[in-house]
Image 1 (tube, rainbow, N blue to C red):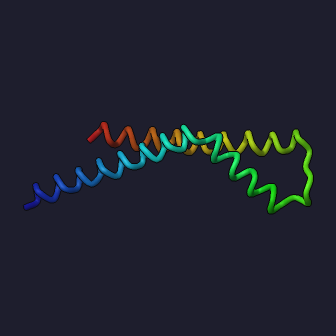
Image 2 (cartoon, helix red, strand yellow):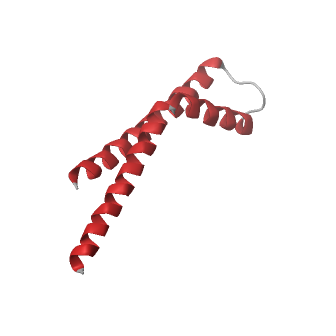
Image 3 (cartoon, one colour):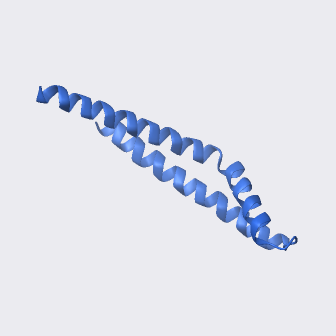
Amino acid sequence: MNSSFEKNKYFILKIISLIAALIGVYYLLNSPELGLKSTTIYMSNNTSGSIATSTYSVFLESSIISYRIFGGILTFVGGYFFLKH
């Protein structure tokens, strides 16, 4: 009975790891679109209507990089645990 529990535990861990890796790949591939959306939302909520182009570019680039880092971490951790077990 304990062996069956261990098999189920590893199977569930593999599924969770695979899902995390796939979500990470999604964030990596869609980071420009996600960054643009979050920058647009931030600017519409926190500015008075106009903003310098350089400031907008900094926000956009930072947002895209954040999504890439998050996606990279998820992909690495999920892929590592998926391949390890």
